[in-house]
Amino acid sequence: VCNDVSAISTTTTICSGESAIVNISSTDPNATLSWTVSGGTNITGASAGTGNTIQQVLINNGITKDSVTYTAISSDAGCTKTQTVKVVVNNKLNPRIVGNTSLCNGIGGGPLAIDGQFDSVRWSTGATTDTAYVGLAGLYIVTVYQNGCSATASVNVTNTITPTPDVRGNSEI
Image (cartoon, rainbow, N blue to C red; front, side):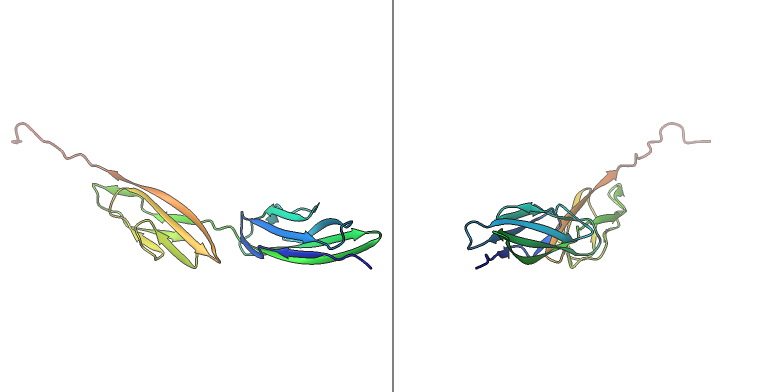
């Protein structure tokens, strides 16, 4: 009777920078367990190995989701069995805040906007739209969400005080 192999992933879809976890087992106590990996042209961190647990931090450097396929292998006495597990890695979110980050005497703070398309947005001001209106100097933070993943960006809004002229002396010309 040939051995068997079971590969169970606890993480079938992850965010870029999270760990893919796959548990490999066999009822054959003498089986040697290993795995290979394929796919994921934009994914780094996936590599072949041996043992009963795959735990690898995967980074998706692409602009869309990508996936890797792990092939779990159980070998004993010339008998080899395989099972594949696919792990989808959502792309890394890179939010960027654009807009006027300078106030002049507390005036002129236009809207700050998030550059890019996301499922939802939450600003430190409480706004949940793509823009947040600036009225005060300080740190503004936005958290973006897409496909169950999140990332943050921040910008510091400054206030420049313009000096008030003080004209003294003879006002006759």
